[in-house]
Every structure is written in C-alpha cells, then in structure tokens.
Image (cartoon, rainbow, N blue to C red; front, side):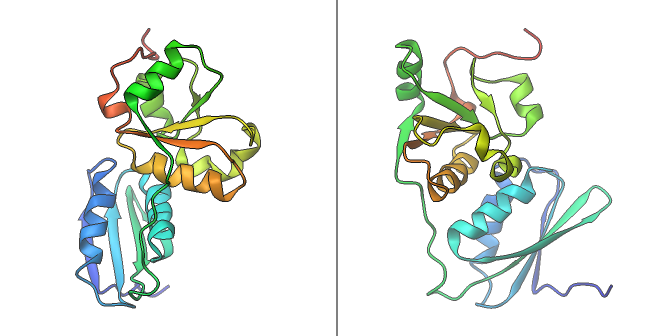
Length: 191
C-alpha cells in the first residue's frame, strides 16, 4: 500500500483525552476545505473519540491505521456548509448528578471512559461502556431510562449522549465537567 498523503500531520502521541481532540480541533482550523489531517496518537481511546468528534462537527473521518503503538487517524476537513459542531442539549452538573444519586432517584449512570480509567475510579453502580463499544452495546440499555453519561471531562460523554439520542434514547443527560472534578463517592479496583 502506498503512503497516505496528508496536508498536515499532528503529533498527539503521549496525550490523553481530551487533548488529542483539543489539538485536532485547533489543527483543523488551519486547513482548507477538502484537505486531510493525519493525527498521530498513542491513546487507544482516541479512535472512538476522533471518529465521534468528526461526526459531531461534519468533518469526514477517513479511517485509522496502526503503526506499532502509534495510531494514525485521517480526517478530511469539510467545507463551511458541512461543518457545524453539535453539542448534546441536555446537560447536568456533577452536583446535580450527585443529588440524584443521594436521593436514590431511579437513574442509570453510564461511564464511557476506557475500561482502565473506570477500573481505578468510578461512580458506584455506574455501568462501564467505553465510547468505542457504545454502538455495539446499545442493547444493554433501556431507551426509556433516565441516563446520565459521564467521562473524564465531558467531551466523550457529549458524543456518547448524541449517539444514544440518535438511536432513540429519549432521556439522556451529559454530565459536566465529569470525573476530573467529581467530588462524590467513587469505587476503585483497589477498594
């Protein structure tokens, strides 16, 4: 196979969520419509994150190639008419979710971080469905449940909330700012 030609190469190796997306978003602004961006990343969750981000902005996710430990993501910049970043309209703060949990409200908390992130720090009784597995695991959720989606900073959970809504889930809430600033009880593989 021939080497894929990109107009710009972004090095996001060694960075964890949300930084590959933050840097991708910034790099994309420097490209002309139709040009291709190659993002080099080592974060395994970046594949699902970049694919979801591209879908929410109108940019075209072309694919990902693995080169050893490095993932090479390819995106095509859309024209101005194609690209308008969407955000999930229903949001709740960490404190609002904490109140719901303390009141024992009938809710479902879905954590879309990677399994390792979840293992070391998660909300008790939350359900781990990593972003990259969400589409294939939709059947594990009830479309009528009140679902609160969390990740580390609110980016992946925003994409996940949009994906759930697109698939007929009617009461989905993105939690901001997410686990990076969660002050409620947590569980860990260590306790």
